[in-house]
Image 1 (cartoon, one colour):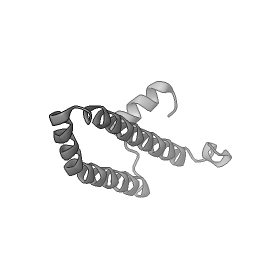
Image 2: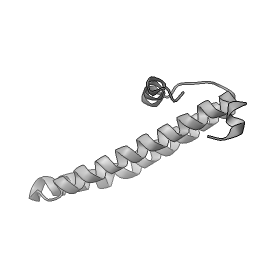
Image 3: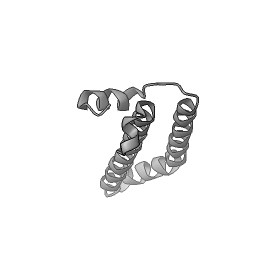
Image 4: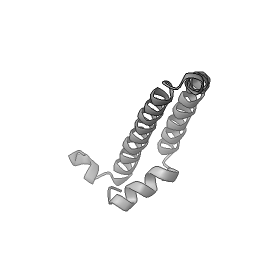
Length: 96
């Protein structure tokens, strides 16, 4: 995205992976919110789904934060790694 990224392919690779991972997490958050909102209209199922999401939301958030710190640490160590879903999709699109 910048001129210096052409000179630093390692930095560009991990920056694009980070953008892809963040985009995937944002997309999943929006999808879960929409599904929860739609199911929230149904009387009994809506209550159960709302309680389930209330309990699972902190765990999902914690897992996302741990993933971001783990992959950031791996990049800091100088390792070139692949994030399972994100790297394959970005390679298929020609972004990596």
